[in-house]
Image 1 (cartoon, rainbow, N blue to C red):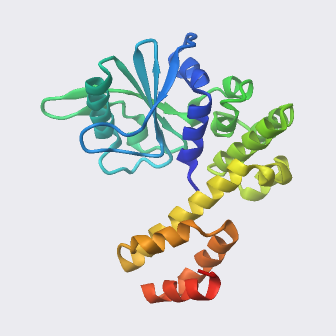
Image 2 (cartoon, rainbow, N blue to C red):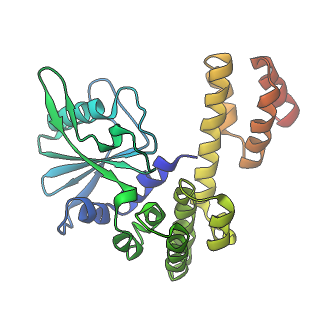
Amino acid sequence: MSFDNVCKILAEKYPEDFVRWLIGGESTDITVLKTELSLEPIRADSVIFIQTNNRILHLEFQTLTKSKPSISFRTLDYSVRLKRQYKCPVVQVVIFLQETDNEIAFTEQYMDDTTIHRYRAVRMWEQDSSLFLGNVALLPLAPLCRTDSPRELLSQVSQEVARISDRETRQNTAAYTEILAGLRFEKDLIRQLLSEDIMQESVIYQDILQKGEERTIIRQLNRRFGEINSSLIDRIKLLPIEKLDTLAEALLDFSAVSDLISWFEQNTSS
């Protein structure tokens, strides 16, 4: 499941709220920038750039601390590219979603023999939930916040979701919340407290589920059989979520790429 993608969607949809949370102050002149930078393109689903008040807020969402190149080096790389392209100050915030004691989540600089580059690290498990509970844009992140009673916090979040009057917003917020809560809670508890019907009706929820399953299947196939032909990857991406579920189970018995081709012949019409 792409937890980082959910956060990227939220930041793109509600940039003013993320700026208010991480920088402070109000601004109506906000632009979400593309996530591809000049020179050799670098792209990541978890990265978002927001231009406001003649400066750029660079957000990077991390579920895991392991990264190649390292998170700290990537912030330096992004900073240099952003300053070259947009010629303004850059505020960088790496938001760690899942609780860990790994020192990378507590590091706020890149340092080598000649360079020191600083950025800010936000650890969601240290954040006060009150800011998130009162804001639809940030509400899906609330289950990851600091609390002495995680179950009670999730219950509060579900009550806040239920209060959202607009049906589409309620559906999508429930979907975002369900996915991010999966970093901390068992699926059964989440579905006890968040209406499964609301989540399943969300088009965005279904889209996130499908993309997450596609990536998992492609990653597993590449790991087992080497890089898969792009035409096969394209066929995987055309599969509906039900077929992806079937393929995910079937690939456990594959011993060669030819098994994947045979599976397509048996399970698809084209």
